Image (cartoon, rainbow, N blue to C red; front, side, top):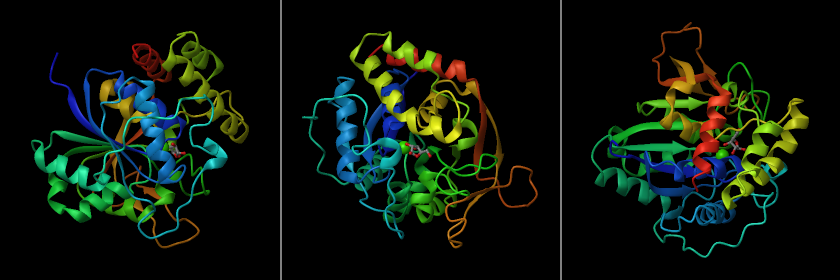
Length: 313
Ligand code: BDR
Ligand code: CA
């Protein structure tokens, strides 16, 4: 096997973040150098704890976990307990984590790791608001050309927004951070709502996790059961969209996805469209192409991958 790919996961668990972390920890092609928490779905004190809970669920208390930004760069923190429940991980009953939180700040860990590892050997997988990543770029601009790639869940175009009519949650929560990251010149692959809304947690798919009869399989089924409840009503679909695990699945099986290199600009001035990812899908401007916008996936292939890998935990 070739050398595993170095990744840092930056996240705000969230049930779908949790499933993404499990997918990464079940995949030998990936070396998870650390997991950094950010405020988003729920406040930071809960997201960092939730990361540790999930690492322990996967029996990986060796993974270093760091706490990062407590709030977005400019705006007030907006959370999403109405989707994820009070803890962010409502659904399964999981033990309180006992593994420690690292003392180092997440932003310092990101900077230090990118400066220490070989140039372009670390991929940043971002599953929440982009606050920690923007702060790291501000703290040490020399990291920017050293990042191999940023793969993130965020934004939307044809699907519109899920938090406002114009904006998706991760970008809406910290649009100023998103603007810094999209303008940095780092290769970006983005998983907007346009693709994640096609990855539905149907009953049959969730049942396959339950049928594993393992700690991780049962917890995944219970996480998805809770998570889908809100979105099923909202979208009128069987099951809800499973967002964040697509970021990890892309690293493992990019052939499941298709998209286009386009220009993305982030709206940070109009309150009406705050956090909108203005996507030049049709190439009607000459603005530089700064992101690979993923629009389609093989949903069965995606769930087969999740089932295979979470089945190994
Ligand atoms: C994104 O927002 C959060 O609620 C999810 O974890 C995902 O990262 C979807 O808009
Ligand atoms: Ca998330």
